[in-house]
Image (cartoon, rainbow, N blue to C red; front, side):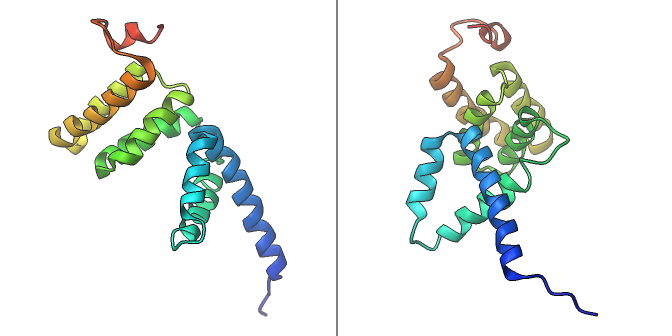
Length: 151
């Protein structure tokens, strides 16, 4: 026996997950970033991808129980580093700070991932990370990264 799902029920489910994802996406990345991503793609071929990302990445993955946002941020940093996705890495360094990661934890994540993805990827990623950390938190000024966390 074949069961059919009412199209309205599917549309409602998609919309519910999309809405939840948009809330999390805004909380993690900020309204300005999300608004720019959405408006930049409205009426373009990229509009459907933005909806997909909000629904399935942010609504389907980032809303799951089992990991805190800070943990998801650490994992995301390592993955983006391994993939060499530096623009997204910069975005997620900022997001990691919003999610409670410290400067030291972010730096240690890069060092840890370097052991698995290789020195060139690690050095390249650290350039991005250092730029964002200095922009967001200021320079270390001779402190070790963990000493700078209290500043």
